[in-house]
Amino acid sequence: MEQSVTLLLVAGPDYDSEIKTLQATMYTIEQVLDIGAMRTEIADLGEQVAAPDLWDDQANATRVTGRLSALQGEVDRFDSLTGRIEDLEIMVELGTEEGDAASLADAERELGRIKKAVEVLEVRTLLNGEYDAREALVSIRAGAGGVDAADFAEMLMRMYVRWAEQHNYSVEVYETSYAEEAGLKSATFAIHAPYAYGTLSVEAGTHRLVRISPFDNQGRRQTSFAAVEVVPVLEQTDEIDVPDEEIRVDVYRSGGPGGQSVNTTDSAVRLTHIPTGTVVSCQNEKSQLQNKASAMVVLKAKLLALKKAEEKAHLDGLRGDVQASWGDQMRNYVLNPYQIVKDLRTGYEVGNPSSVFDGDLDGFLEAGIRWRRGADKADDN
Image (cartoon, rainbow, N blue to C red; front, side, top):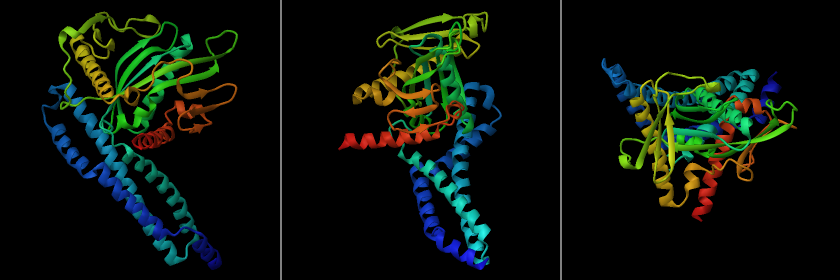
């Protein structure tokens, strides 16, 4: 027994060095993410939530509670990881003093898990772009491929919603335009979480699906496409003026799957920005006035992204390539004749498409963020 403990101690990690490295990394993360500022904002939001008149303004109440939940989740994630490192230090100390090989083996496994968790959190520090800390507006549009493309668009929306749910991020759906047979023509939704834009912006572009079509009676393989656009949610300090004469407002009835009516009034709103041709819709609210206000939030966010991108001459950096057709895809989802999801920019791939469609996106997001950081550095040079 003593010999096995000695061998483990010799062959095992240098815990003292490893733990100090982890602590130093966590300190850097704390400074870069400004966890202190997050705690201050949480306290302020907590006071707002406690106010008896909070829900007099439902839109503001939803924003405040969503922001509070997202920030609390971020701080809890940081605190939990800090606590695990402290527990690891105690576990190693006791295991070494008592010569407990089993405890040290557990410590080594926990060290590996913690290092991975810290690495994932460290990626967040790479998000230092002008809008990276913002919440995100995600738009998905079916591309080439007919009904399969519409079905694929719905699969992608579910994928991002499941990813958000796994991280306890709230999702607010602004618009869903259903296709006649199945799936979605388009959808727009917000993910309310700190750094949601910076994290998800690497998803912008054309996604390609290859599978045996469930809509083909002959069981043939079908290739279909969907475009994903990600823009940052605006804050009150952002300046974007949209004159009324530049906007065309259309109202219509919300529609559900298969053409079913969602309501019996013309409450859904479509806004068209005439100079740029940008079109947004909203149908999630019950009144036309509320839908128009929500649609303006989306429109202004897209126009700001367009404006900033044009100023810096890198539209693709904010919106991605959204042609949704052959030759410009950024990720392939192959279900037949083999199973793989592969990002064509980073080379990152997963052999389990089902897990990806269930929201297991963190590996792709991390690889994309690192790839973008490397591309930015190359451009600087």
